Amino acid sequence: MVFRRRDRRSWGRIVLEFFYPRGGWYRAAQYVRHRLRRLPDAPNRIARGIWAGVFVSFTPFYGLHFLSAFIVAKAMRGNILAAILGTFFGNPITFPIIAALSLRLGHWMLGTRPVFGRGPKPEDSQGLIQAFSGAMSDLWNNFLAIFTPERAHWGKLAGFFDDVFLPYLVGGIVPGIICATVCYYVSVPLITAYQQRRKGQLKAKLQEIAAKRKKQEGEVAGE
Image (tube, rainbow, N blue to C red):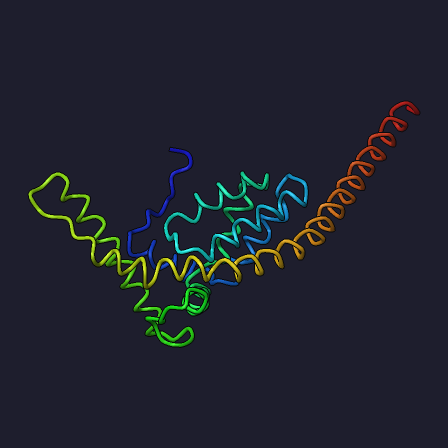
């Protein structure tokens, strides 16, 4: 096939590059910025897409951020690709900070007791990962129980919802809106300036080509 990768990546390499992309996170961020600036759409639509992508990065819907960004961008009439690229605001570097902030704020807003420690410490991130993986495992086992003699157990999932998921969801709304709005207002003038500069460069290039062609036609006519 024409578009098949020459070097097939193993699952281990895929996981490794998710946490640390080839070329580093700076290069990955530069690529995302480059793609956003070159999207063929109005600056405000691209910025609305970025808003959607950044906002859903503060939600606990891990594994569904692309779909969530698509839905929010559709509702806001934003650029879909910009929304998907905007979800990279949430990455292995920022997720521990986002999770710790959202959990602490969510428990405070709900008046409940935080389960994880104060601030984005390494042990908090590990505990959060274990909580989500345990919930997914229980959900899968309960699904299999439909087709087997095993009984479904919802106690752990209920505890996960009360202690982690709901506080995370509630606590992520305010910082998500703030960060997404900041990114929106920063993106609009930057994208507008880039598109205008690109149009000017393209116009100058076309004028240069037209001048060369006119000169060549004049030389041919003179002969």
